[in-house]
Each structure stands twice: as structure tokens, then as C-alpha cells.
Length: 61
Image (cartoon, rainbow, N blue to C red; front, side, top):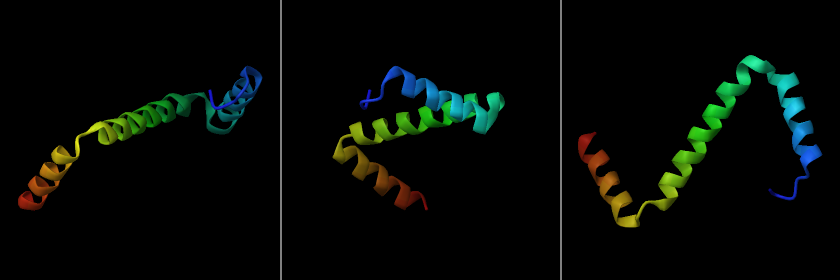
């Protein structure tokens, strides 16, 4: 996983917990997951579909 060792990942998690607190971490994780999902969905789309969607948005505006 990007060359990080297990202790390094644990240390990053502990630092994030201290900075953001236990209440914000689930929200941050959810937002990050949605962003990654949206990026993958956008990059997997076929170019023709993306062009059609752009044309539809222009015609709606």
C-alpha cells in the first residue's frame, strides 16, 4: 500500500484521531470514500457518454 509499513499507517491514524477527534473521523472517511467513488466512476465512463452528458447539461441550462 504505497510503500507504507503497518506501524506508519497506525501512527497516521493516531495523529488523525488526535487532530480531528473521534466524532469527525467517520464523516471524513465517508467524504473521502464518496470522492474516490466519484473519481472512479468518472474515469471509467466512456468518452461518448461523457460528451452526451455535457450536451444534455448545456441544453438544460
